[in-house]
Image (cartoon, rainbow, N blue to C red; front, top):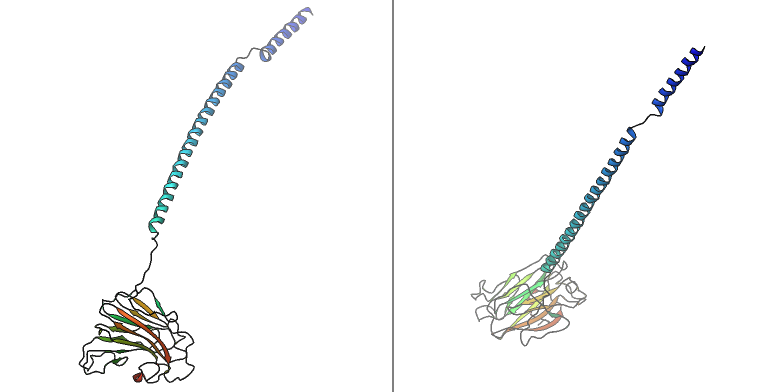
Length: 282
């Protein structure tokens, strides 16, 4: 019985010793884990510092890029401003020259700038108008050098030039005729007679049979007669709502150095183109 007790007591001692060895024995892993945690913490701090450095470098690069972009934008703006300055034309001043002795009126004439170049001594006369009437005719009574033709010579369509069958020099001519609206009709004087009158008129051929209340010519859009020389340009205008088929426009005279213009501005009715000489009709 005593032997059994000692066996049981020894077994209990062995069992307690085994249990203590499994649960309460010393451990070396905890220290290693702490060391690993400390090393990880150090690595984490180093990585964080490295990341901060990278971010700082990136931010510095972004700032440099932004400053560079701003400089580029300023350069572009300067270039654009330079282009605008280069493309901006300086203001121009247009002047016109009126020959000495020229008579002007406020109702029917104006002086402006011509885009047509005329040699010295020459005279160019242009008639332009709108869609209605379809056919306006430019007439001129012109002096010449005393050849077989009547003097002055009645220049108009179909007698468009004095040299045709008259044995006279071609000092003037109807260079262009138009019978389908707008114009222009053009008369040129190449070799003017000195101190002689050149008499210019406009006939409404479309409405030549009208004898009253005929305002188609005067109300035609952009109706004007333009006189161009080498040193002057002048426009003549017919007042709107004027009842007439013949407009007696002006006379021009050359004095060896320049042309002088005298507006007439008279209006009447004329049926036959060949009988036109002025208003009132002779």
